Image (cartoon, rainbow, N blue to C red; front, side):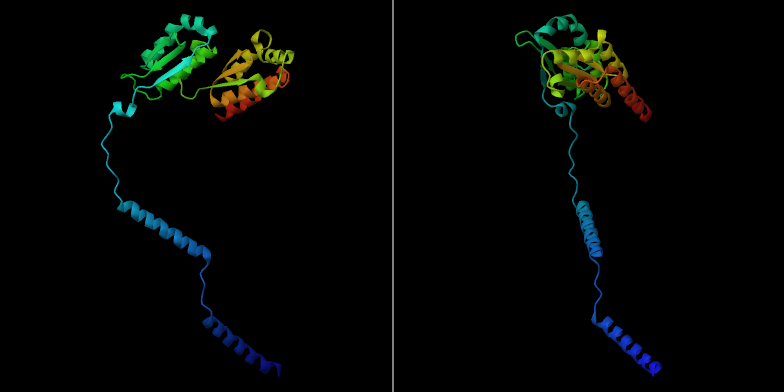
Length: 248
């Protein structure tokens, strides 16, 4: 009896499966629909880009590309008048001969004024000259500041000791003393290891170098301000410097 009933059940199931297959329609997945829409949009954009013609403009002359003459002014504090006067020829020569700019010191406003002219070819020459003069005004040597003209990937960064930690009185003096070290030893060590130049002007700290080197020097100086002993700072700098040397 069981054997006779089983085929009838199979036939009914098969008929129901056939009827269900006929009754239900196939539904496409949403992912495939999205892909089709995206492909159609890409095709439409490609067709439109081909259809639209690119405008043809005549070439621009060098004078129009350079634009009107521009000028930068760098204020000179009173304590830098004498060094500027003594090193004026060293500052004047590279700006005029190498960068082809015009430069003068305005006695009324006490500013170094740098201006472009017809002979100026490089657009970035004015920025390089302004950074060069600014570095000298901040206290860097002319030879060190000259690197801003020769190299492209050098920057200036300035911050205050009180920006790292609010110190006053003797505490501030001790922090500055830890940065300088005995006879400037600590400052020279940081400069040599990180390949930067550092100027300590009262509570201001100026750093000249590449982005990565400035970051290492700034970290070391901040650790000294926060109270770390110089020996520990030396070790951390050497580890970081060796890692960067291995990378490059």
